[in-house]
Image 1 (spheres, rainbow, N blue to C red):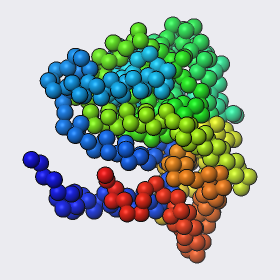
Image 2 (tube, helix red, strand yellow):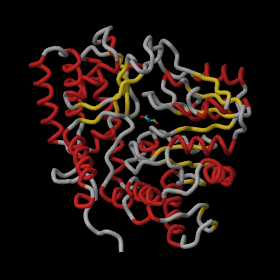
Image 3 (cartoon, rainbow, N blue to C red):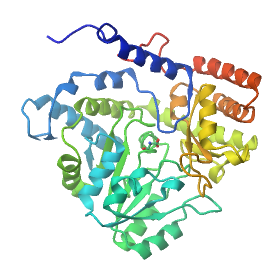
Length: 423
Ligand code: DSN
């Protein structure tokens, strides 16, 4: 029999590290747009015996025996994903969003094909053609960006670029853009130039699940996503597509991009899809959007420039030049970390600084909303962010801000005080 002792008895060093991060998670205010806190049920499935099973292939067509239960589990996950998003086909095996994108590209593109995606430094993602990523190495990515005056994607410009570069695929989606993309217009352009439309919905899929954001599923040939952001599932990826692409997409994921699936993560994804189909979850996603908007508006009123003037989704970008021309995103993020507010620095459109310094902070509300914060609390968080950035160098002010952050974090915690960080 396996060792049945608890982690703390077997490996005190690792138990200590997990407990330390649980403490960090409980005692800070979390504003990283791509992070969230899973339920106990999701964590239990992720830490279950499904971690022990190899199952290369798909339900009913496996390269290993002993997969009867795994088949039921993966079918349940696929059925729940299809039903939650109204999709014809679901692949729940991608280990991450990057691998969901890899599987999709492998399915539908040949090396050297032209692909049109959003500029990384204006909100796109590494896997949308960055030269340091496989996507930029294997395919010829061309880019569209945002309009310099509105800082929004201009669909006339997307069409112009598409007509000029004639891509085989258009990628719509982002990791740092606070407005709603026009899925129907993207599909119209894709149809006009004879391209496939892939929507990378990693950031907004949770809002889509809860009805707080327009769904790309009816318009995209293929939609890729992650399961661990606003969707509040385990770390992992997901692909949804029209049935006619299903077999190719499945092959693109396994065996093209991946080997054995992470069955424990698939089980946890299924739990998250189940949780996301409730009224409570729908109310949660509406609250995320309301919180993001309330925080962005109150910061604007406080004299901070928000890229594009606000937000329609779960995130927004602060332009730090409205606080101090010399304040970089990196320094601002590190400073906020010292008072217990966790964010990430980010380029803003037409950023004069390189990405590792940047001029913006990306602020996201899914995690704080899971902790129960509503508009009043997030406005207060916005004030604390501004006070810390403006008051840097003033020790008394920084201590006062840190004290208020600790008080607020303690009133809105993701896990019980005695939670050791694992189930
Ligand atoms: N790294 C993720 C994010 O923070 O948005 C995207 O992959």
